[in-house]
Structure formats: C-alpha cells, structure tokens
Length: 88
Image (cartoon, rainbow, N blue to C red; front, side, top):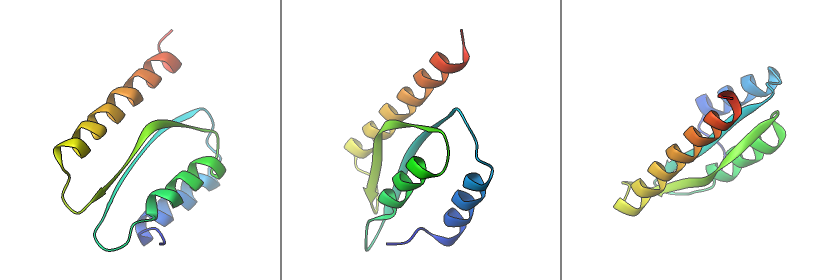
C-alpha cells in the first residue's frame, strides 16, 4: 500500500530537508488495506536522523479503547523523549 499522496509529499519534503536530531511518533488508520505504517517506518529509517518512538499505532476504521490507550502511550513516550533530548 502506498501512502496517501499528501502524506507522501510531506515525507519527501522532510527527507529533502535532511533534518537531524528529530523525534518521530507514527500512527495511522486504514479502512480497506493496511500497509501505510510500514511506509512511514521506512521513511523514519531512511529519511533523515529520526528517533522513532514506540509504539507505532495502526487503527482499522474507528479506534477501539485499546487503540486509544496505545495512542496515549505513544504521546507520553514522545513527550518523555522530547524532555530527555531538549530539557537538560
């Protein structure tokens, strides 16, 4: 599955900027066919100097309470990584 075109454009633009020392959390949703999350993870590995924070969250259609819990955990983990990296 390919990324939604506006998201693919954003990823290309960010890759071209060759950003360094950035923190990235990934989440996505799908209805018919999943796979975009793998594309975003590939972007994180190849698109610059990104620290990929876990968990990556992929939701089918409407999020369940468990999905929302995973999103909250991702948010907490991103916040903690930002604090560690930028607040000394």
